[in-house]
Length: 427
Image (cartoon, rainbow, N blue to C red; front, side, top):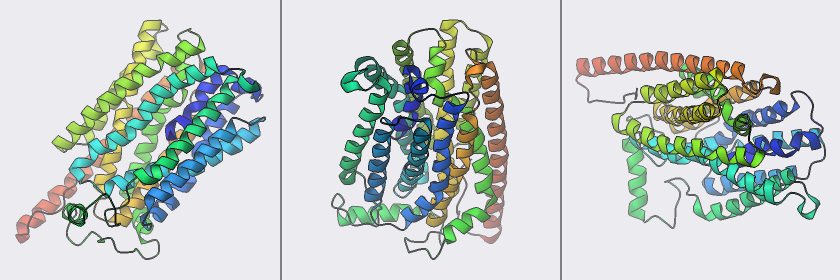
């Protein structure tokens, strides 16, 4: 629901959103971009707040209900500027969910278990890209004119209502932290859950669940250059994945009507979702992160090159399947972030949020990579995606080399002092 409410504007664009709100020039791109401004501002404060809470289930569910309400109101707007304000607020509230959910996972699972679990969480975005297009095609085709509302307004009204319903259910479904008393865990199971996480961290580095004074976790994250480096690398990766925000538009370049174009969006994302489970699980088993990030990005680059080289309908559709594979790299990258900052709970919460906040710059800027004037081939857009993917791969390679040297230094010190094997970065 998070990604569905975020991306429905692209589907609404095919059925009169721009015309009804009298949008001109790059105003639609600004409508997409403004969401990520609000998203960027709220992520770090939200995760710091979440780390101090006993009931993250209540906090995340409440945020979800609020963004569902904002989505519902978007279906009633009459002017472009009203839609712009609501999209900003939507990003502001949505910012609590994803970094918060990723942090919540890191409190329950060990480092070698997080890849698959992160894939299960982030597959929601791929599933949304697939099935929101199917849902949108049905709503846009079947509800146009019902009760006097145009089709694109029904899209926001229906999806906003669904989000509110799911949010109410989530209050009783989402788990809290292992340290929070829970009716679904016995005392022995809760003790086991806490002990598992203590064993997975280096001795003396885990805060054992104690309250953190001030903003020490945030200050530690901001002072660590690795946080900044990963944030920039993820920003370039997100920019290369910007095609997802305009997927219905790219599908429409094949020349079919709006309903068929939306239906064609589903298969590439379904394949991408299935691949993410395999790649993430294999990454956990092998303990490798870098090559499991690089592989999907290279496949995506192949897709960009195919799309920019031809206007053949079948070949361009095939290129969409290659492109969606690059989103698999995002799953493994997030897991790498969790693994790298796993020793301190408060720092991990701040690092996740801050890196995601920096990555949001990729979404803000990349919304302008796809102007209508570059269509229908969008060759320039694909060229930019190739460039940003390549930069992200290069930064990940440099980061891997640094972590490798850190592991070698730690091993040499342990051998010299006769110490037991301690913390090692996953590469």
